[in-house]
Length: 386
Image (cartoon, rainbow, N blue to C red; front, side):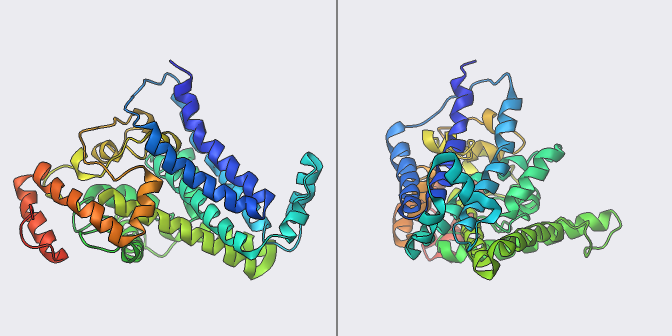
């Protein structure tokens, strides 16, 4: 087994360490770090092509350890981010950096222009989405592994989204690409509306799932047995820690970063299933998700890109997911597609034709009828082929 197949997934950690370094350096370095990461993904995916390999891993435990390492990495990134707007030297972090490297991090922090703090929020939220949510997505599917579930739910707590471990696994995967799924964006929906709608409906769905589970076990919904309640308390604990580091300004800084990280998840949901329809009587198939095999996105996002296979077989570990090059494809790699989705006129111009092509190429006869109804609701006309 080529060791490079293991090492390629450490690209994720290198990007996280780069973000940590740039936040610690402060000032313009934070903005440079944000721009560097965005350019790396967009250019890298554009020029490095697709990864369609599916190697066999003899030591999957190494890959699981890589996932678990995301929690201490994200803790360090968010700590440095909050420290960068604190008034004191929390835990002596600035003094430690100066002693270790000779760099006066405290002086750099004090001279940081306010605009670079916005870059810190954007970079921290991006890391909450990438280091936190993407890793947690893989871990919380491993419902049989208590360590993975523990790490995954704490990663989700950074974006106020521990309900993802409930709604995504037991709701989204069951109802994906149907009108019952909060995360599947119907044709013509604006991404910003979807962020709000999916967040609200996702929380309601998670609560109902937990309520039914607890009722089967003879318990009421209002208790610490409820994973929704426990999860939101975990997030509140993180807010309390941020408050302890510097009062409401620092707590507000964390909340802004967390909400941006949560928004990124919903934007990803939007682009992974936009416009899809599925006959609820049919099992989920690779054609019911937008896929991409872009190399940089795949390596640094634990094959989240291979979403078509993931939804067809949600229990398959990320390293074993197949590329399915014949599946419906996204516009590009993940960060590129996220940025396109954030410009609705551009998104509709590029994606609506792909949705109409999906109707012609992938839809079953029953799904063509569903497509016509979806087109009518979107104002596209009755015909699926329009």
